[in-house]
Length: 395
Image 1 (tube, rainbow, N blue to C red):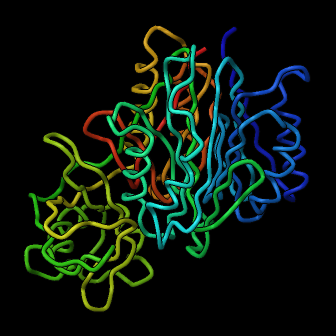
Image 2: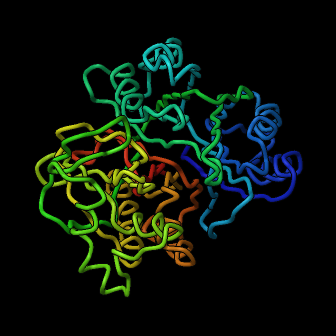
């Protein structure tokens, strides 16, 4: 028996959205999916959606996340619920750990304590992680999850950080009907064929390597001994001028959009780097980032254009498809940063359709995250910002 992927998207109340996606995801009344993932905007509280979905598919692992945007292969929509069901001969298990902010080790331990690391007859395993980014330790939690699931580092991992439609107040993840803030959901999918992970970003270096010399959590105070904003302004001045932007006269209301075009590339291996998104310029000249950048880290200011972002989404899908080997894709689950939507604006649908095309027209569903997770895919492993992670399922 092969694998089948079905996707759904719905608007309206939480109750009506849940009913609609249940009807669309149901492949056959006699068959249950191995995995369902639900991505809900703040207009449809996650707990009110996943409860009915779990009740409709009692033998299925249901995972969920609040979002900052939802999409399926037909395009992206706001204030909706997107969902994906994976049918096939797989075994999926998950756990939920709360208290992620204060005790990440304990939260991860709770989430993984009942998960079987192996399953007889299913030689391949893939981890899935959904977490609350408001805890402020996405990188640490990702590494803890990877090590807890497989100390030898052989288990591949994909996932994302929940969103809340850019309110930046509270994000939620769920396992079954149990939804919580300040939590991490960790799952393992055991399969007879390997799932494929692809990850890529659309940024290129703009500056020479720079050293972060003073930090305070996710705030970078100084780079090369100078205020972080002064370094950013010098590195981007000429490139910004080409877009008609005077770096020295940017209005405060325009700083956020400007910084999303010129993000930080954190060196990650000899030939690659992970993107770190600066979110705000502070009064003291420091920059606040979406994830912690350690003091002493080597970074480069990067730039990104919409064309590059569209192509990077395609490249992530191409890599995921290649990782399937000879198998054709049945579909995919995508974790895509809200920052990419803000860069692409009306072209975000083009990026979504491009991913489906690279997967041979296969269905896909995903959400716009506050961070993306990909492990065991070479130098691009870890916790990311402004990056596309594609998890492809073989037929």
